[in-house]
Amino acid sequence: MSNGFRLGLFYTIVRPEEKALLAAAERRSLAMVRLSDDEMVFGFERGSLDVDGILNRSVSHSRALYAAHYFEHYGIPAINLPDVLERAGDKILASLRLSARGIPTPRTVVALTGESALKALDEIGYPAVLKPPVGSWGRLMAKVTDRESAEQILEHKGALSSPVHSIFYVQEYIPKPDRDLRVFVVGDRVVGAMLRRSESWRTNAARGASTEPLPVTPELAELSLRAADAMGGGVLAVDLMESPRGLVVHEVNPTPEFKALQAATGVDIADTILDYALQRWRR
Image (cartoon, rainbow, N blue to C red; front, side, top):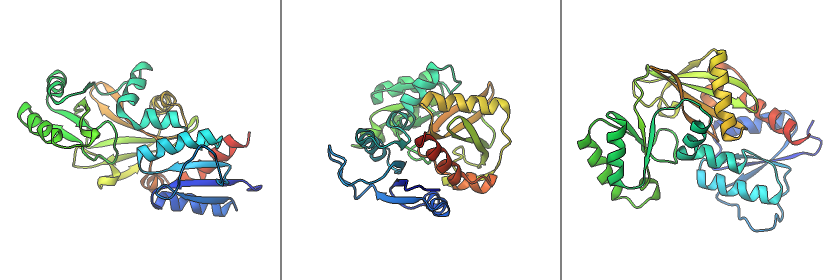
């Protein structure tokens, strides 16, 4: 079935998702070349990079994005494309795209200084959620309950040197149930969905949320596909919340983990990704 096709797996660490992709490739007798993101060097010429396509699974947004641009420069098709990684991997850019497409999201304001962040929080109202523009797994997020706690958090961020803490993405706090929804999109179809439940307001599976399969309603599928299309399509996880005004999309993940979703739904996500990649690249 491989017909000599060589697939590159660009990764940071071999997590359960990468193990699943390697196993799926082995079942197909498909050559999969491991490309560690802490060992590769990128020049203007392709050199000895002997692959026909790339699955970009780096956990670092910056590594994934810059590598994707080089893969594109070399003429090597990759999932996901650099434009998709750039849009979906940056919450500000993603929010702009979702808004431009008329996709419902939480109310969001961006500030460029700590002083203007206080104004943004006042505009959104308390409680609010303060997020870094780039990040995943619910890290470095804060639920801000009043102006005093806002001042303390912003003072702390101001003392940190990382650029991540110098741009302020402020979002309304959604009084949702004890869960959110994750929908996995591959190409132009939804392949599975799950509920993530937690007593914490952050319902990431990586933070210990429990998961269960979620039936995909026409409304959920339509909204998730629109959100994925707004990012440029590919392999994406769309995260949604049930707000008092209906479903809202709060994030689109361009390098999604899928261990929890695969366990909850029984869908072979790794095999589905390989199907999509091979069908797309062999046209």
